[in-house]
Length: 259
Ligand SMILES: Nc1ncnc2c1ncn2[C@@H]1O[C@H](COP(=O)(O)OP(=O)(O)OP(=O)(O)O)[C@@H](O)[C@H]1O
Image: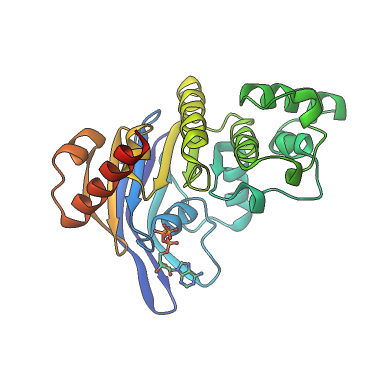
């Protein structure tokens, strides 16, 4: 699935927080959005799926396989999200419902598509839990979010994002809250699953070292604007903009301290 963003701007309270942003991701490609805190990464991703906050005004064009999303009704957007887009966010605990079992939440996106019996939904949830490397899947599906570790919860988040086989996956800092070892494991898992499905990926992070492990191309944002675009290799080895150079220096520092 191809994503084309053209002249996207987001205004909140009289302030332009995303400013005339354009980028494209071809089907099956992986694009990283990187920038410092407050540069507009999250609002860009939320706008793509019609989930920008109510107080935000979104203008420009966002097309999925040529279909314009800006201006669609909430109902139509919900249908696009449910059938074509999977999302993984930074804090899986707040994304999960504390009162529902893990299994119910993993199978939830399937209920929008298929009429599954409880038994079928449970079997699909167990299979998905196994695929994301959760221990003892047949037991874990009956547990609640607070009974899992942070890394396990993010594996649940990934299972939920992928179970309906979305063609586009949006991930916003999915490993930031995890320790370095767990982060590496989850990134490797995530990359493998995205590749196996041939899904298109947009991955948001402030950490270029993370991006180097998962995407091919990068758009660097500063104050809501795209200041530099290129392959991860080019950005890492020959950053042009001072902000990009700062991100590269920070990535080198983390890589060294981790090794
Ligand atoms: N609901 C909101 N109301 C007002 N301002 C907002 C709102 N959401 C975001 N902003 C502002 O918009 C700008 C971009 O925010 P955004 O969350 O997209 O940045 P980000 O690059 O994702 O940052 P971080 O890495 O910290 O998540 C920031 O200045 C932020 O304060």
